[in-house]
Length: 514
Ligand code: XIL
Image (cartoon, rainbow, N blue to C red):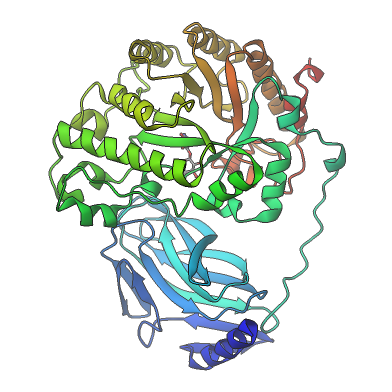
């Protein structure tokens, strides 16, 4: 029945649509904004059509967006396109997403992603096979670019071959070695966990997640537990009139991965409670207003306490035992002399902000949760000394369990000797260790580059194996090369078709490479 209703609504919508074109059997919805907003409305923001463009202003959170309801047909395959313009930041990431409901419950998927440089109209394109939902709202949002205003034009939804349309057959995936491929989680079982980061777009892809589950026993949400995803600015503003320290948190973005992890018995590493980056600037200001003054140290510590308490309470209630460890603070040491990096945390709270964050994390995290400090470039000597000093001082208060080496490397940079020196020095503190974000760029995707990359991965794994009793986990920062944050240089273990690269075999058996 729902399908028939949806089909009828789809036909009605087609007639009512601002411009409807029948192009070689394709049904095309085009919102060109020439005659007004064409049904687009603001989701927590204001939208205004003018001259063929829809401008969105007054955003308070990254999900605030221009949106429009579409009567998509469950099972139908759609191609989506839109052009986006922003004039405020040097560059900003955008997504086309869908909010869908079934029996009144809303969930979300990200369908297309792109980076928009200042002043340049940029096309985002994606596809979507409509799931079995009652309603569909398509919208264009930023990825962590806060309150940025932006414009869209030429939003199109194409259903190739009419509607509902079956998904075109995808080229067969060439998986050469899947049957004989070992699982990294099994290879290292009894030594340490082996995992990856996973983002929200991947978490809602069941085929990909089956693959993730077959290889990994721990996952880190790539962006979805960062402060800009969890801190609910609009709801916090509503609370703050009563109490400047009140903080509202939400988990819309993290839920798909948390649900999957819970259902499949996979551990989650939380990333990250306190960071200078991907955090709304309003978090530190009076009334959570961009124009407000910085709050006092006392208020900020109150906010930090409520933020951590809110997160731990929600996760413990809804996902008990799923999040086993946290990066309590990320990247607090600078790349120069190894002092604390300048950040609103340092300015507003002062030198002891990491100590207070660990104290609060310990107070509210369920017993047994491992608390980490996480950083990059540990192999650079000055930074290593700075990190060592910081860890030593945190250890005196007893609220930290370990150190996370990000290890975003390139082949040979830093050298394995430098990485070894860093691991040795931090390990001497007797703390737990993890490789939290391993990837190794290799330049172009040639056989020679992949071979060198594999050798480097093998060296890193041999080193980690020498300290296996201290390492709790090794996690790569991404599943396939094409989905990496450094996809331009092919840094991961699997290619875009999920075929294992030489690097995979090197990690699975480091001794196979001499
Ligand atoms: C990166 C993500 O991979 C990207 O998707 C995002 O746009 C920026 O952040 N160090 C960290 C991670 O601690 O959070 C970063 O992740 C990579 C560097």
